[in-house]
Amino acid sequence: MKKYGLMKKCISAALSLSLMVSLSACGGAAPAASGGASQGGAAAIKIGGSGPLTGPAAVYGNAVKAAAELAVEEINAKGGLQFELRFEDDTHDAEKAVTAYGVLKDWGMQASLGTVTSAPGAAVSQMYQDDGIFALSPSASSLAVIYHDSDNASDPYGNVFQMCFTDPNQGIASADYLQSHPDLGSKIAIIYKNDDNYSSGVYAKFKSQADVNGLEVVYEGTFDDSNASDFTVQLKKAQDAGADLVFLPIYYDPASLILTQANQMGYAPTFFGVDGMDGILTLEGFDTSLAEGVYLLTPFSADANDDLTQNFTKNYRTRMKDEIPNQFAADAYDCVYAIAQACEAAGIKADMSPQDVCDALKQQFTSMTFNGLTGQNVTWSESGEVSKSPKAVMIQNGVYVGVDD
Image 1: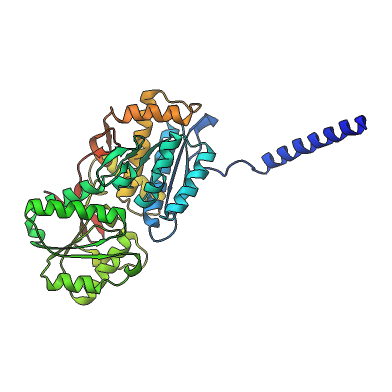
Image 2: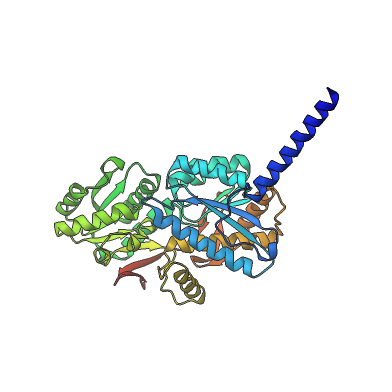
């Protein structure tokens, strides 16, 4: 019996070893990352992230993914510091973002681009804090992404940072811009999404600053997920109130419907949006001629003449079949390069724990200055909020054109 038992154990061990080899040969490890492979097989720092690669907001997610991959490939090609990027599809859904976070954590993520949009970002920020993983979101702009108490902008997570403007900053900057450009419109209507952190956050600060600046807001209309396809009531009320400018702190999908329905009504005010409007020119099925003359505040304009912008735009268009990069792409590109700058300054290595990487990156980001596509002399506060200046662009002949002040 002892001999039989020993033989049974040996057979079991052999089968186990065989199974392990088989799984390894068949790719039993995690799926391949979405970024470029490191040069010469050198150990790479693992960077994760999630965003909408499918669904109505996919323009944002695919722009972020493509630009981040481009930056990773450029950095890896230089030798030295190496990155490996893995990007998951969260479809702009909070629950799916939580699932994506778990996948990325199991993969061994050491730093992150967070999420592309705000609601998913707010859902996973606590997880980043609990696990001690540094995140730098290119475009999740809600205060709820970086603060436990977003209403009062207090109690920051401390390790979740933003490359984009916060919603309050966008609202304030928009009101200030309209005050200094009264020719764009003297009577303002606002249409915003009241069940969305991003939209309601921008609206609240815009309205407050508009009152301070003495702007005349003649109508405020709202919508939510249950009625996000027909805006004729809001547009008619704005028109009846005499609004010659409509402020749209919303994403490009509902904005495209508003522009279409306003055109059908013969209502032609100036439309003014913020970064969520960026992407409307690549929305499938949308008549981009309806966006002619639309203004928006953004940190990036693809027609800028500096070498960094021109090289990025050229390489991105080559990669994306001549698609012009939007602000989301530019912010993502800057995210990767900012993380690279911080990693090099701190001497971060691929064998460091996510927690040690996080501590080093926090120290760097709260003390360094970064120059990128979306701003010069960019800095971050200890709360993770970025400081940089917005730019105004206008849509002309189907492209974004920088507006000279």
